[in-house]
Length: 292
Image 1 (cartoon, one colour):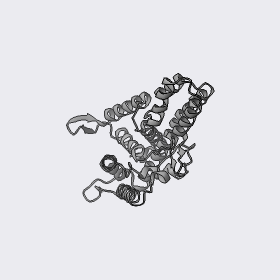
Image 2: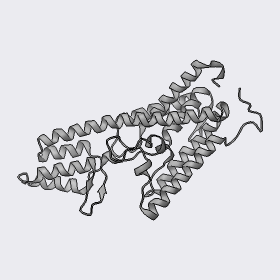
Image 3: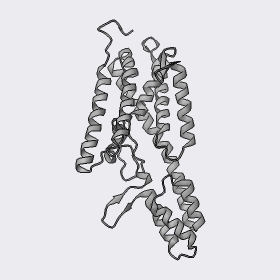
Image 4: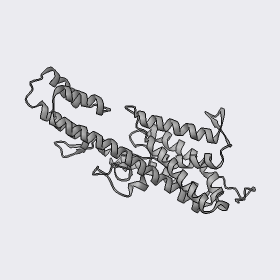
């Protein structure tokens, strides 16, 4: 059993403290390199789909120490603040219970599990999108082009909408079919402009954040201390087990709904929870006396 007497319980234990420090350093590095040298660290350290030329194996780990973008400071600050606040509030309790080694293993496993689940989901989504593009190429018409944009393009560029509108109003355009194929290929896979600058496509988008690992921490807290009371919106008292269950349902619904413009990796959050559950069950089965 862990000793919670005064002086034994650490308000900011070692692993939690160092994770917070690393995350803050990375956000500062993102901003400095991005604004001063126009280097986007997310290209190298954010998690990318394996079909993207930006993908590297180390991103499975590094993405969980990245947050937001240097182009949107406010969103980045909010992203890291809520993740690190939750890590401090709940992760500190878990680290005091388990000790630094076990907590570090747990945190990393949840983060890696979240990354794998996210890659599996976007892999399926992108393969579906690639198939739709292949089907379109066999029969490129103005109506099919418009339908593809409506069903598969979340944020149509002016280039896509302009070509669509022109083609619809000029259905006998001789080169619009080929232009549409090139435009959609650029949307999916990126395109090199006349100045030899690469503009990434939707397959090149990066996923960053510690949310998957933090959701694992949230799940572990609710699993180990189910009757502990959390304050929803700092006002409404909710037992931890119901808070975690409700959050999981919301994430599942949001992930399945897949609303246009929603750039939250819901299945990464669920993946963190799933791997937290698996690891907790393994630990409990191996040594019931040392579970908590």
